[in-house]
Length: 266
Image (tube, rainbow, N blue to C red; front, top):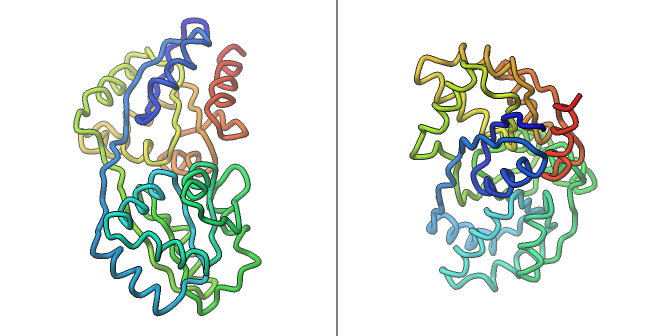
């Protein structure tokens, strides 16, 4: 990266990502675009478990490690974790990727289906192809926002879908780093922008729109090398009018930064 400035919108592992950039010779510009806000409705989860006992779910989809962990914390507080685990044992358990997989295994939950890389909605639906869900109930652990594509596809297959919300993505309380990023982009001080989730893109442009700077942001960010962690993120960026120039595989941080370094070198 040879002294080039790389904008990072990651929040949870911002230090780790910045270290990877620095090791490649780059200058990390941190502008967290997400805040993880707990959003657990204990009453909803209690009712869900009660209804579940009366009507078994055909399949349960776990999308994130954070959400899976929060869901088990909620059942712990309700003293119904043992019941929850028994109900899961009667359903087809689907894990979207390694993070929910790790949490489920730590809780002794059998995993029946795992989405293949790059762990997008497409792979989740492919994993469910062999599961007859027409007329059946499917429970989906929601991540920071509703996975509209997944919910729509499941309903089109004839399933009744219930989402479990455990947290939501919001803009950080301190928005100044994002404003500083917009200013730096306008001054031409950013060489590349690395997006590691679709929600980062939505939040950045939502803030820009509220400040009357959306079109300016689109213009200036397209003068940089825009890197996306995977197809879901790329689709969100394209919808916002951003040209994605790099989408490495597999969608993991190490290969992501290495591919970014190589692209900048070229």
